[in-house]
Image 1 (cartoon, rainbow, N blue to C red):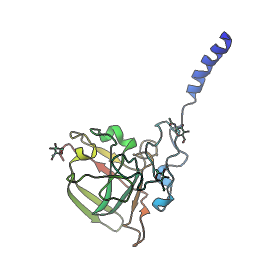
Image 2 (cartoon, rainbow, N blue to C red; image 1 turned 120 degrees about the vertical axis):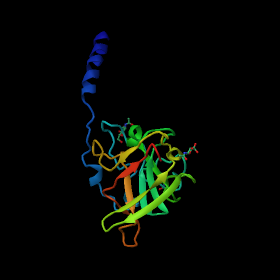
Image 3 (cartoon, rainbow, N blue to C red; image 1 turned 90 degrees about the vertical axis):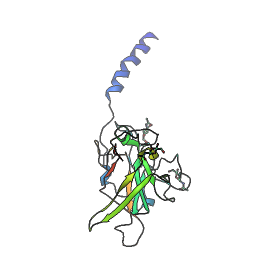
Image 4 (cartoon, rainbow, N blue to C red; image 1 turned 180 degrees about the vertical axis):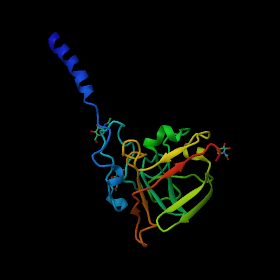
Length: 195
Ligand SMILES: *[C@@H]1O[C@H](CO)[C@@H](O)[C@H](O)[C@H]1NC(C)=O
Ligand SMILES: *[C@@H]1O[C@H](CO)[C@@H](O)[C@H](O)[C@H]1NC(C)=O
Ligand SMILES: *[C@@H]1O[C@H](CO)[C@@H](O)[C@H](O)[C@H]1NC(C)=O
């Protein structure tokens, strides 16, 4: 009996030594889900060192609202775009980059909605190969601490799983009048101490 117990103590450090891998087999930016409906529930494979994807990529009327953990985002036009922001009030971008969720201007994406009064200015610039939406926001409306100077999100991150982990982006800007297409490369700078 005592011998068996001691043996299990020896096994524990051995199991701990089998550390989870850091990198996924396929980087997030190499996963292609052409339309939002092609996305799996979790774009990230999970079971990796930084923890699992906290939200999901299948988003619908059931998930829409202030508790949504949707991590599928859109930049369609000036009246229809989303930003990445924290799940919980008063967070910094730096502390929550791995598990931020989509906050959108418009219903229909299964996400949280950017509250009325948060956006104070917005502009859209379209170039042949890219589109930029920029603006001013009262960041405390979307859970960013008012004194946070912010940070940057993209589909690579420190371990190629993206920030947020498993975050996907779609746009109609390059789809010739068809439905939204996946955007492989994107960046989202969020927050400013002075906005
Ligand atoms: C993370 O996800 C993997 C694969 O889906 C699952 O097996 C594992 O239990 C999850 N781990 C945690 C801590 O939730
Ligand atoms: C709605 O989204 C949730 C969360 O991803 C998913 O579990 C559920 O199956 C979806 N419902 C439909 C009808 O697609
Ligand atoms: C942002 O919104 C909060 C909450 O409504 C308010 O207290 C604060 O004064 C606003 N900040 C600015 C810069 O307008």
